[in-house]
Amino acid sequence: MGYLDRIYEQTSEQPSFRSEVTEAVVRFPGMPKGYGAVLDLVSQAAEAVRNIENSASEAERTSYQKIELAEKRIAELEGELRSAQICIGEARHKFKEADDAARTGKSRLETAERKICELEMRARTAEAQAKENANALARIEEAIRTKLLEKRIPAHTARLNAN
Image (tube, rainbow, N blue to C red; front, side, top):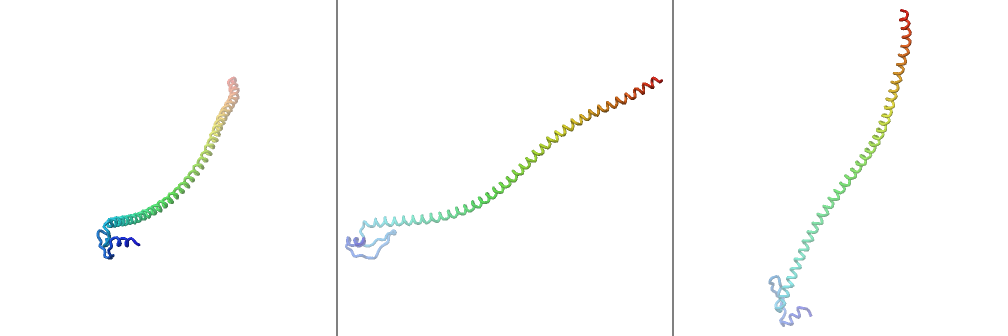
């Protein structure tokens, strides 16, 4: 025996399929008075469920839109990341080239400094040799003068004596 059959037995009225609708609640004739409140609560519950479904549907739409925006942003950020990685790679390559050039330059500078030291030593040695040669030349010149004077003085003395 169904729910409506019990209602009709209790009221002892014959069922009529004509109903009246008030405030979105369908009231059947012959329905006991206490059940109207139950029907109102069921109607309110149905309305609440519809509101929840509508809210859930709207939230779902909003969520999908947010997901689409997030996916687009992720794609943009991934593109930016790839560009940044390319720039970093190029910068690393340039840095390595610059580092290699600096090392080569440093090596050349060290070689040049060693050559300068060698040349300075050679210059000092040459300068010392030049001074020694100049002194030797001065001694030779002095010896030549002395010899020449010795030869002239006896000849000059002999002429003086002869006069």
